[in-house]
Image 1 (cartoon, rainbow, N blue to C red):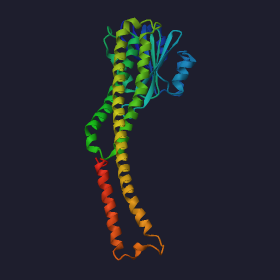
Image 2: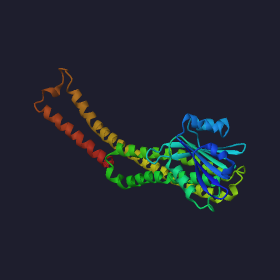
Image 3: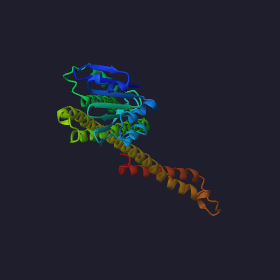
Length: 320
């Protein structure tokens, strides 16, 4: 689907149905926005046939998910942006072509953020609808704003886990899996947020976008949001690292306690096994075998050895 918004020189907003209407000299075009949403193969070919964009930029649109970036092709600036799904945390690509008097957006799946930016530009008073760079700012602003709910959901899960983890100490493996699951989500969001932050830094410091000085404060606001998001991600990652180390330490202490218990039991039974092994030999010349109370004496000896070793270990503080 292709939709076209045209802003005339007398600040009227018009919705067009065909790209050919942009070539009408009576249109009095000041600037226009063409949005490719889930385009067909024939519609995608218009990037080359009608707009004559650079083949490398078109290739980046059509083939695979790109890292957020900005490229300059003669009089067209090409931006790759990422939208973040709040539920799955999957990143999807939104591409922008910024020309002298136009904006072309291209995305292979519908995005509520692009729709909201479209409506915002369409309903804004003409004094605020400065031009195509303002529309590009609106798209980027909506995309970045959508990062906050996704990250807040993860942060809420982490804080809730912090509050309840003392009650769930027995479910060690379950808790540790939950920590790694939250950490994995944070890493996935970071893979989107940090490249977008770097992209905004490049946009702010670009000297090739002529209108950028007028919009510097607008894009600085987006950059500030991304800085805040980056800090939240890093802070939450530190929290998950602390939790991971906490549970690994608990596991190590638990294993040490188990090994200590098994070692004590083994050491106590070693002399008992030695005594039982001696009197289990089948030599005929063993005087003790003829004792009437020999069996009971050996049992008493074993009990005395066990109690003596237990008291010795207790005195050395092995059970503290």
